[in-house]
Image (tube, rainbow over all chains, first blue to last red):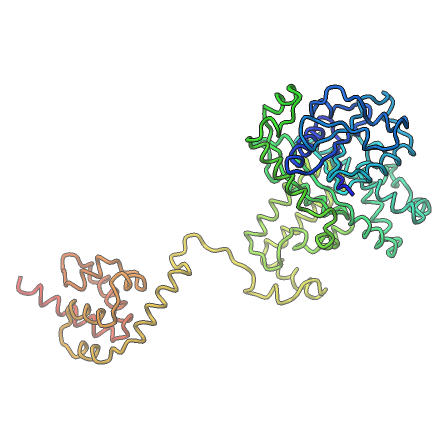
Length: 310
Length: 217
């Protein structure tokens, strides 16, 4: 079974597709077979990023049932070992995917024969995006150092967290508990996921333990893109710390990706940065992130125990 | 967020209970960079009231731990509530910052200790008795005493902090190079005490000898 990485984040333009393409190239260069899937449904562009101008076949063939084998919709790229399933030929309304279609895609992705599958997700927090993100072994959130990006990233993490929370509770009388707690606080604001967990813990300590255990299995990875020298170097680490302190899941900051003028050039040239400019500090950053990803087990359970108390 | 308020001040700032004031200050700065109102992190993470509550806890934690008296009281309370191990906050167990301008760093202490040990080990009775029986003690006598132990002037400097040129002047009876008598007496005392011999006798005999040298001129 393939190891699945999902790359998401609340904010558009933070470099999700850029990270996907470069992770793909670097893993492929290690001799691993890598499949990129563009799940930025409705606004796909990963094919341009990796230089596949007009993919003849793609996710549309799977969605319209012209094939039942998702792996047959993949096309090779210029880089050996790197394949792409594009969604550029899908309907313009594809972002409103039916639940059944979504489930079908997720099931098929889990069966892919390659070593790694990398899912490129769109910005925002629609159910589709969140569920694709949650289906992966490792979920990577890409953000940039602007307050707007940090804000949307935190929002995205909270949305994923809430979605997961609901998934867990759904199997276990969620509606009853939610009714008891109330979706809204007294002053009318919608409860934050943290608030919900807190409340469940106070009201039903037994169930809360199960909940914590399940949430702890969730593993978030953070990447700071467009890092510049005037940015606090420890920003990513600090966000990691706050997340680990206040959520019951496990967060790891993978590293900064230094901003580079040439990224623009590589995108204009429709070639992947790590392929075109391998001897740049930015590419070193990407390599470091790739090796951290491949070294770490998807669910480092022993490490997670340390965060129980907080 | 109620969990956050259950943390001890030490847990809140993520420092050990025996942290030094320096570490407390550092941890406080670090916490502010995350939770203060102008940090983009806390801005995105918490609603206004949550952040204010957290900041207040951090301020309280810092104000308590940085004040030695308040910290002691707080530690007592934590021990009573069995929240921390009493052995970790015992008096004197708290880490102290290393002073930057200390003249006696640990490395020097060990050097002077080994020198002192060497002097103690050496059998000096004969040479000291010979020295003390003299009416006049010259610099050369002191030098012989030093050579008998087998230590260099630099090593005498390590222990006594009398500079090498002055030590050499004393050993050569070099009158023009010697300091004024108040200092000289103190230096001789330090020198004599280093070798565990009667300091008063050495000072008197040495000065008498100097007088003799200066006398004829």
